[in-house]
Length: 267
Image 1 (tube, rainbow, N blue to C red):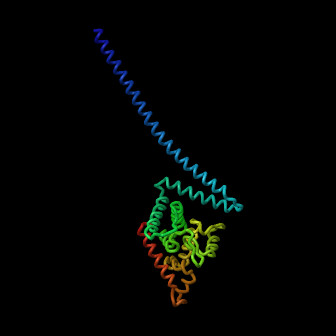
Image 2 (tube, helix red, strand yellow; image 1 turned 180 degrees about the vertical axis):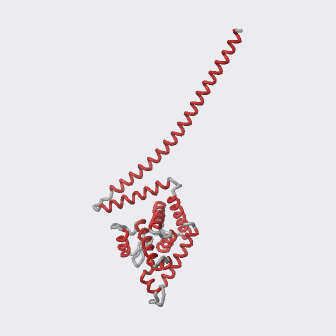
Image 3 (cartoon, helix red, strand yellow; image 1 turned 45 degrees about the horizontal axis):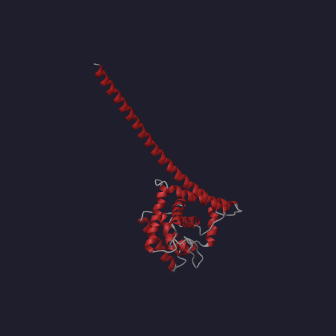
């Protein structure tokens, strides 16, 4: 009888020992999984902090090499740096609708550049800044993205430093005298007409001004962007019986064609 009791005792102890070790093993496994999860989160946060630190360092270096005496220039530099930081931050958040629109515009521009084999086009960083400026200022001034892109394509073929014999400058080919007037209207005391965002802001604002001047008629606004609002008014009033200059007619057709093309690409 005592032998049976001993056997039962042995089996019970063995079972308890087995359960104990299984519990220990399960606990160790759960701890390992939790450590792996925490390690992955830590690595992701570390990479994010490294990116942020690099951006901060670039910003500080950029500010350090500039010697501004006018506070407006300092504020403008800070604004530009924030925009660049924002573009990179949004690239880490694909669900952001603005970033999705920027990528869509950038893809369309890249497609046209490759198709037409344009030269002197922006690198990927400047192309992203260009695309973000088109999205931002099209929305701010309520001008179709396709119209802004159509004008840029026709005017400069995406060459940031483009200059015409008549003195028009930059992506949207703005005359210096016109740029000076626009700068006062948009409240920008200091600007660089070859700077991507400044140029697109001025061009988008001027398109909105022409659209308003001609009661929402986009086609008249396109003609006015090329030959000037006085020219359009004199033609539409019949004062210039000869009609628009040949250049303006071709310009108008080209911009409309590009608008249609960009709209087909979903922008």
